Image 1: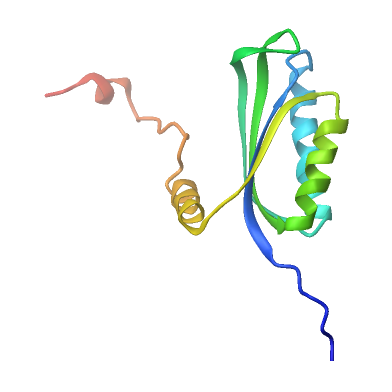
Image 2: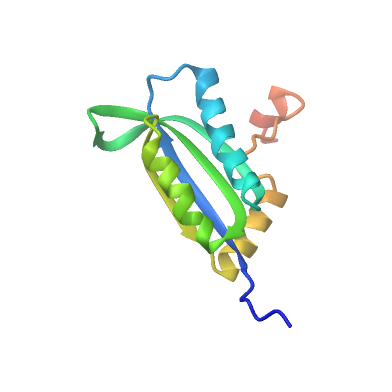
Length: 133
């Protein structure tokens, strides 16, 4: 009989800011590197959002802007320490935050993904947008 405790998977979201000096293709490669790390350690990625270059609220390491990325995933609690350690060792990451989600936040994120939050809905013609008759 096996009495070793089983590892429970929890829902997490992580947001990290990359240095603005990287070329556009390098930002996506850096995000893909962290997504691959999550998947290699038994995590399941639900959503990846590239928020792009944004102005920082205050200077960080003398930088006024940064490339924001957001990832929702499911993984083991022990893995979070490894993920955050990889953020610390990577010179391209200037800030990060990983949060364990409660059930209401998980439901909200699922609903948000299903409704296409953040995606622009294009109208068929510009006249439909401005015509209020």
